[in-house]
Length: 246
Image 1: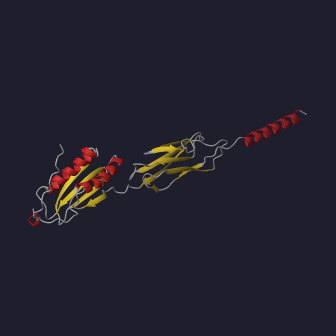
Image 2: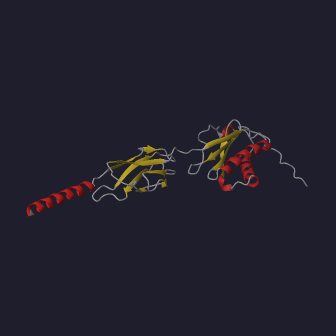
Image 3: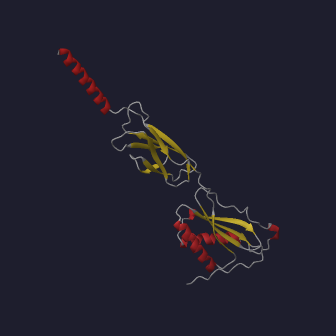
């Protein structure tokens, strides 16, 4: 009788042990990776998303994200983030995600690197070009030029002029001073944002207005054909100064 009770106790203990073992989850490590593009255009939103295989979790996993450059726009704490890549052209961006509450001994973090493509080279923007027009007509062209510069707070304006083969002495210098004075004093453009360039002589008067983005060197006259000074004829009559009203 005593032996039977002892055998029954052993069976019960073994049964309870097997039940407890069956109810206790085995510690398994999940495979965690990050999906994301290998490269992205500068300024475009960059999305990274967690990919999980084999994770047994009763609640939705949380992730702590960090990036080597740039700013996380949205998604911190979730399995997907969006990163701002403005002004990151030509750089590598590495995103790292750490799994909150990962089992001991399991890999808890993963990283992915994306190359931000270089920004396209900035260059000057031709705005207008005209010839030997009277100042009243030129003011209308300069008005439009001033509006464009006012609307772009970081760029500058450049006025380049070629005097014609027939000219009067200092025509280019005087007309450039007049144009800049109008832009500064009438249109109220900062004088530091207006550059004037004397490009010498061509067969006909030519004035070019260009927008110069920040970081770009002013335009030179090298791209335009000029005539040698020996061919210049100072026979053009100097315009009369307008009479002052009393």
